[in-house]
Length: 155
Length: 155
DNA sequence: ATATCTGCAAAGACTTTGCATGAGA
DNA sequence: TCTCATGCAAAGTCTTTGCAGATAT
Image (cartoon, rainbow over all chains, first blue to last red; front, side, top):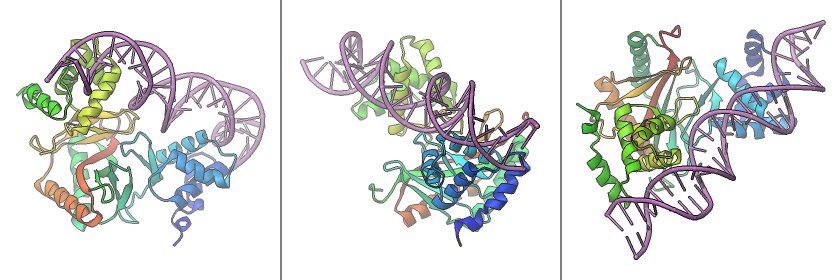
């Protein structure tokens, strides 16, 4: 199944228009880049990829688009400790399965892992619920990352 | 119990010297600031606090010291999405109990929470073990953060 | 028609680096 | 004494902003 199927531009389009914003070639190019290039992309990576299809694209537009998509909950933004923000399509429903990151502090490689056991997902859900009740927070998302040294770097 | 007791300068001192580095007034001031001011401090906050005791202090020295302490595993560094790194004493043994963060995406407030149930800690440990085995990673630390909207902001 | 978007360049925020001076061990 | 550390200022990186022209609906 192609990534395009999972993040159908029409669907994104509707969502963007629904918020009174416009669908443009630049935004389309950014969405395509996110679909094709996969997870944990830097703004620069998104830019380089999107610019191949839409050479007129400016980096500032990429930042603005990523910010918009993040606000709309379509994209999640996170850090891995190298001072560059990372972006990827959000998976709010967990439809494709949870995925989190394993970061090598030596070579900066990032591994996506999805080996979640049922209890883990369940525990996470009940933690969110408990935190919500105790602190009056409405929790929208979470970040779980493990840091260490990968095999190649001598882990 | 005062924070100073938990992070005895002598202890830190030994650790720093053990790595062939020197104990200096600037470093002492940074350690004090981390002790007194508590969790999730920005470099700027550490600087302002430490400079009260050691007015000659430069911001660059604070950055260098925080980097050193992070390398030695005494301090942990993390992000909460506002482009400023945050620092706090690490708790590798979990002696003071795990603590993680609840971040309000509206007012940027950070709440430390320690309400960890036994299963949660256990699950985390076994996940680390599993990831270690499967990916050949030697895992040193993890970050868990929840994002949402706090009570005051309308959560 | 008109409010939104865009690219470009400039500005901004945080962090790192170069260098001569100062100071632990 | 001899490295290591410091303060200052300059440079670097990533990100945001201002603005006039272009564009989606």
